[in-house]
Each structure stands twice: as C-alpha cells, then as structure tokens.
Image 1 (cartoon, one colour):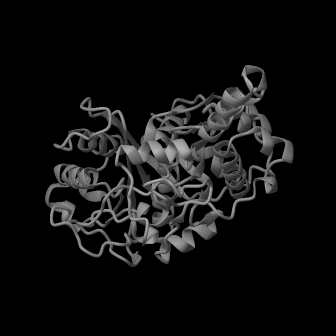
Image 2 (cartoon, helix red, strand yellow; image 1 turned 30 degrees about the vertical axis):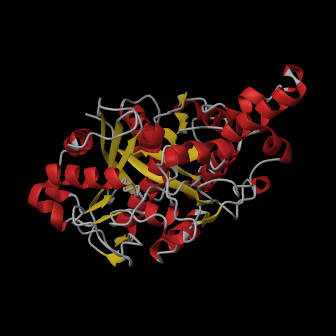
Image 3 (cartoon, one colour; image 1 turned 180 degrees about the horizontal axis):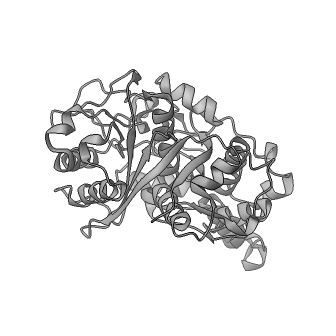
Length: 413
C-alpha cells in the first residue's frame, strides 16, 4: 500500500505579492498583478506588458553575495522555500536530513544571466565571462542551492517540462514519498523570464497578449476577446510530507495529495491537440490514481492561459472527462489575476487549489466580460465564491504536448 502524502508547508511569490498571505488575499479580491514592463526597456517591443513581482527583496532571504551570484528564478525559489519551511515548522524542528529532498523545476531558468553574459562575450571576448555564469543560471540550481542551504541530503532533482513543470515537480515528489525514498520533499516551480529574449520570443510566436493599453485586462481566460497569455514570474513551493511523519511532530496539514496524472499529446511542438485528448487523459489518470469518481471533484483550477485555442481545448477536455457533470463543477483560472507563471504556474496554482479546499472558497476568473460561447462552463466570474470543496483538481499543460494534473483532498483525520 502506498504511503499517504500531505502538504505541511507553502510559500508563494507572485505578481500579487511576496508571501502567501498577500497573494491569497489579493487573489480572492480579484486583483490583477499586470502592468507595464519595468525589468527592461520594452519601448520598442510590440508587447510592453507583463505581470512582474514588484515587492521582492532577495537580500531579505539570501546574503548579498549570493544575490549577485544567482539568477532571479533561483532567488524566487529559495525565498519561497524559506517561507514554506517557516510555515511547516521545519526551520525550528529537528528532522532526518538524509530523508528530506528537493525537486524544484523551471521552464526557462536563468535567461537574464544568459543574455548578460552573451553581451559580455560579444563586447569583450570569452575571458570576460563570469566563472559563476553556469551555476548562476542552470535550472537544477534552484534545487541544488536550496538543498545546500537547508542541508537536505535526500533526493535532489529538477523538472523542466515547460508550463507543466510545477505540477510535474510536485507529482514526482509525491511519488518519491509514496515509494518510501524520502519522508519530506520540497517541491514546486520557479520562473523569471520577463527579459528581452523571453518577451520577444513569445511575442513573435503571437502567444502573448498585445493589449498594451489595458494590461490589467490582458489576461482574460475563456473570454471571447482573449488574444494570448500575460507573461508573469514568481514561485510556488510546497512541503510534502509522509502523513505519519507529519502527525508525529504535530504539523499543520493544509491538504492531502491523492492523485497525479501525466500524459502527452504527441501532436505538435506548441499547439495543443484540438480534440483535447491529452488533457482529457491526464485528468482521467489523476482521478483514477485518486481512486475517486469524476463527479467527486468539487473545483478545477484550470490551466486557462487566455489563448484562443488553448482555453477552448481545455473546455473540450473537461467535458470529455466529466460529461454532463462538467456544467456543475466550478472552474476558475487564477491566471486571470497572476498572469502565466510558466514553469512556476503549477506550483502556485497547486497552492491556490490547496487553499481553496482548506478555506472552502473558490478564487474568481476576472475579466470574463464577454464569455466565449464555446467556453460555457461555470467559470466563477469576477468574484470569489464560498463552496464545499473536498477534492480540488489542478491542470497544467505545456509546449511539446506535455500534460500534468494533480488532485488535492481536504484533510481530515
């Protein structure tokens, strides 16, 4: 029998605020984290808007030397982990460090460091490249640096599956604990790709919104006037723990992880399969893993990026899995407020699903002013909603056709 896994710590850094409390309160109030880009001069760009983290001070979590050495996504990951460790009680409790591991992913990694070092190379030659360049930007260093700072000697890995990254990291960590390879896992995603190349690359694909005059209305999942996602940054980190281990130390339990699914579209490098086959199969796999029926899901935190094709296909997939029940299950896209955190989305949105079950309240989908007739589910428009939630499902889908799904259950003894 697989061991039970619970969530005992959470840490959030999002465009809605640094810290879990600040982000959650702003999310429930339906606030937008969007604005004009300030992280670089975007005046010549076709897209000049994003959802930036504006209140983060890395020196509050790391020494100044490490702030200089490590990319912004690593700073986010470590700071969010510090918050999660604080909320779990592990910063003050003794535990077996050889049974504690880290699995933090990123979709893109330290792209701003790559840009900066390339400029040095072109201007001054190869000897100008910093010896800290590679460790400052590689994706697994979020896990590596975190493990070093907290002396975590168990499994140490990283996930890089585009926008499915955060969900995959949590799901894979869940499996590690189930298999008795660790008792504690730090898991989630971190991203900081609001850079010249990051924004420019997504813009030329026409994947992101061009609504420069109204940034707070740019992310509008399931709305008929949606024109692409709003690029965002941040981190969402969870502490996963074996249930009896958590009980013995009297930990606060936020939720239980009960289902995890993975699938591939095997269709196209960026476009989703129009039949919704891959997303439907990943939700069905997670529901099967949780050993529940589809109609037991009480809330779906949708991938819901605000792209014309993606939102419609997710609705199609939900209808395939839930059939007539699809119309009675509340679905919301918190990306309408946070923007799309890319590799960090699954981590942050898993926390939103967990807090929804814990607090029995559903965050809204804002900017749903003109619902797309093809997107006709209950999207909890504009305002939060109190609801009875026992099981919450979180979807994340990524380029390359990679799909992930997690199911969280309201914890009870």
